[in-house]
Image (cartoon, rainbow, N blue to C red; front, side, top):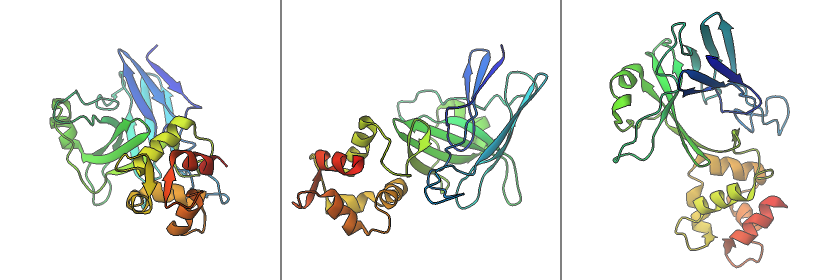
Length: 246
């Protein structure tokens, strides 16, 4: 066995490759790449990412596109072992005392008009996924040395659960996910969320998206009033849970 290709486990907007000794696992399901895409109807949470995983002899090729905004990313690479596979795909940064955020190589992005060859990196921290593009040269020369990933404008962060993009609504998420979201809102850690904390948290894209789906056509002030059940000017964990699970 050289490769195991798995579906039915949503894994973001392009396949994830996991090396395990001489065997490579390809998590190929991108069916929930961007919840809230509304491709076919309002509430359609299937993204428009698509990838083709083709095996011919010793060669395994992955081609397709992500559903990154505003422009999709084109992916094109071969999966090891053998067949000209790209050994950087699936590689994980070594541990570093200076950077607790270890990235792995998610995909290769070929050169297009106006761009050079790049790699798409991913960091998974609990329910939070961070993606960033980096130059191919940086991956070849710096990635394996545990150098900090240079921050650039392509870096994005999303909240996920079981591979699905957070944002369709709070419904369907388990208690641990809801607690994680509440902790992100409760910035000073005092056990409740103020109006100012909710507004500050809305600088994060996935928080704005989640509130927009949970309280459609509502302003931030209206969303706060809906969450603040007893109208005391703050949202407790109990109020938050009851509101999102109603």
